[in-house]
Amino acid sequence: MKNKFLQMKKLFSTVFLIVIIITLSIFLFYSKEKIVSQSSISCLNCNVILISLDSLRQDHLSLYDYSRKTSPRLDKWAQNAFIFDQHIVTSHITPVSEMSLHTSLYPSSSGVINFSTLLSENKKTLAEILKEYGYKTVAIGSSNEFVPKFEVMRKNFSRGFDRYLTEHLKESFNTEKYTTEEIYTNFLPDIKDWSDYSTIRDRRGLPLDALSYLRNTSGEKFFLWVPIGTIHWPYQGSNINKPTYFSDTLYDGIFKNDPLEWFMLSRVFNGYFYPREKGELPQPLDSKDIQFLHDRYDDGIFLVDQFLGELFSVLKETKLDKKTVIIISSEHGEDFGEHGYFAHYDIFDTQIRTPLVIKFPNIKGRRIDEQISNIDILPTLLETLGIPIPNQVEGKSFFSFLFKEDVSPPREYAFIERTPLWENIIINNVTTLPTEEKEWLNEFKILDDKNSFKDIAVRTKDWKLIYRKSFDIQKRFSWWQHLSGKSTLFTEYELYNLIEDPNEKKNVFDQYPEIGLVLKEVLLTWDKQINKKGASIQQINGPLQPYF
Image (tube, rainbow, N blue to C red; front, side):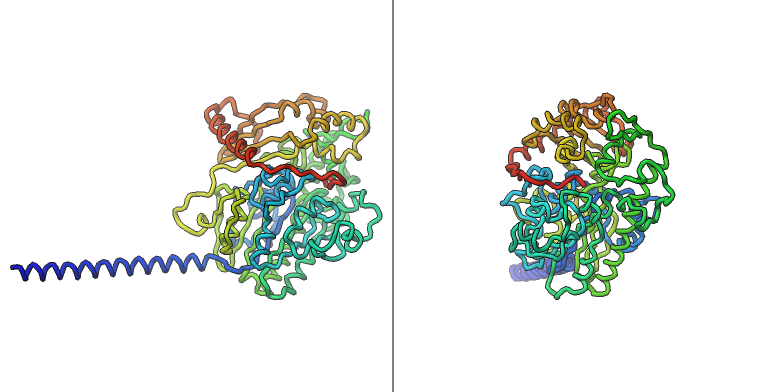
């Protein structure tokens, strides 16, 4: 009996051991499979191309179901890419928003809150991070916002780049070797009067040098940033002699003879053009005027799409597409009269919900309807490349969300800062304003000498709450109120139902107090945290970049 019991015990132990071994083997097998799968998704030592398309509104791309075929080449290329429908940027201004992408920081945290503020020294940019990990870093673009003529932009955005080239240069230069004066002397073209910013404005071409760079890469891994300003006003240059794809060449309305610059567009409000000359009556816009603005804007998108098509071809020819992560984004969108004006002056969805397309080598993408912020791009990219994510990062990587099942969306709330206010931008361009308007804005300039005025917002997929932190000031100095001579309704809080009211026309803060209060608490908590750890603002006095 005792022997039988011992035999049974020994048999049980053997069976138990076998079960343990089998279970462990299965676990190790699937763990190994998981590691292999993760490794195949990751893109260690892959090249990176970041293409920043200034002023590109999401719903003017055929990729996002626009009625016109404005982006046929992008549409075809993006069939295997990740297309983000709810990409929310942190600001409506190019350098402020772009810096959030390059640092994964909100504007108040980076210190870049307008055209005259410097990135904090203790913050790293994407180029600086990638350079530390052996990347050749190159910037080749055509956005006026980053032209080296303007010291602040050069200092902020050339950081970490081995070579920095824009259309405003004779050739690229080593960003760390030359002083500003030497750059002027050696690399800027021979333009007689840089103070005439129309000279710069008309150089919003296509960065063809980027194609040459890709054809002649040395084989070392690289990060190429391509900021393109062609879509930005003056919307294909407003030069009727340039190629047109949608515009009526016989158009003979208000905008025919004047470039569509900020000093032109900023005088359009609620269907009227308000002349600069005192005593002249406002001119009503008709449907042909409105259509002309849309047409010229779409012409610029189509032209850029042609360039992108060529870039995609070069990547395929050189086989770089097999080992390159490609990100195509926009710093902000554009309002086309939904809120009375044309251009980008505020943080409505027309201006802060922008296109984002990311393509990974040998990975089939999909359409993503979950909300992400542009501060989430940097940590996602670094995780893809197998590079540690710095402590400074305020964004959330959505790598796992893209490639693993049953992973929650990366963020419920996206936060936006409206810095600077539109009136602050006008002050920096006072040379083009009539005398009485300069005097009118002088008091505002004195009050805002420390960049103290801004608005903030929080957004979910369904709702947005805007807190007009400076609504009292805006009631006194509203540019639109000044132009029209009519009182504009300002409230401290604006709540919008994005499902029923995607153009944010109706403030329903009083109708949905419970939703408003929840979002208000979320927004104020975030604002308190940002202010507590916010960067000290370093402002440079001197020639500032005009608001092109």
